[in-house]
Amino acid sequence: MVRHAMRRTETTMTKREANQLNSLEAFLMKKAEFDELLAELQQASADHFGADPNAVLWGEAAWLTDATAKLKDIADQYFRRGEYAR
Figure: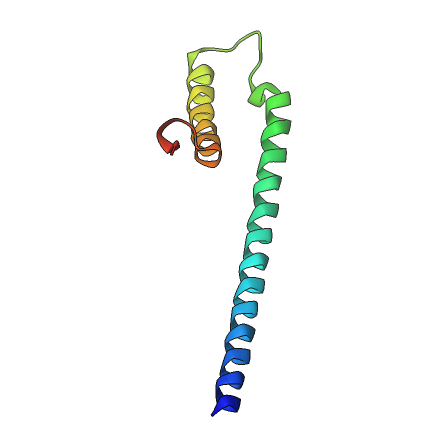
């Protein structure tokens, strides 16, 4: 009976370890995608998001305001600021 319990624990630990490894793999894949998106955004920002600084109109300003709000929301979630504060 003790042997059976021991085998069961080992199996559970193995499943737990496999689950953790699968979770880590999924996390690292999404992190790589996230990092790639950040790099693209930094490059686009350095190029003024394709806008001619001498000809910027309200459409470009509105788009950047919206994009900034989305990034701020992500940062606020991570750093627990604003509505995400605990």
